[in-house]
Image (tube, rainbow, N blue to C red; front, side, top):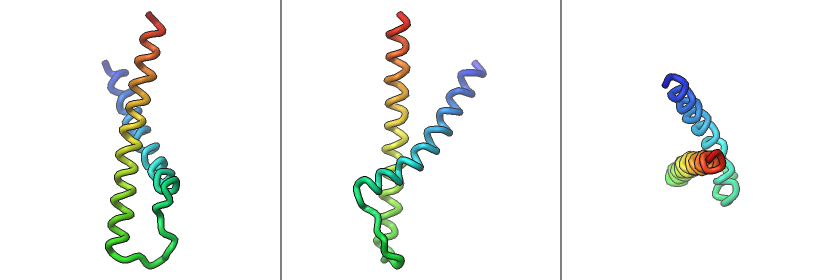
Amino acid sequence: MKTIILRELFWLVLSFVLSLVLAFFFLELLDLTSSARDLKRVEQIFSVQLYLIGCVVSFISIYIVRIIVTAIKLLVQN
């Protein structure tokens, strides 16, 4: 039981770190970042919101891929 909890905690931390990195790629892919040094307050809030949305989408995507890989492993073993 202890190993299962440690493995899930590891995946939680790893997924969080990867989602932070993937959020930058998400914003860069959609070309939603601004190169201006002085953004208006609304633009700053919008950028942070987009970054958070990218983090959440990346986090959910990582867990979906993890579930699919685990399901395939279980199907192959049987």
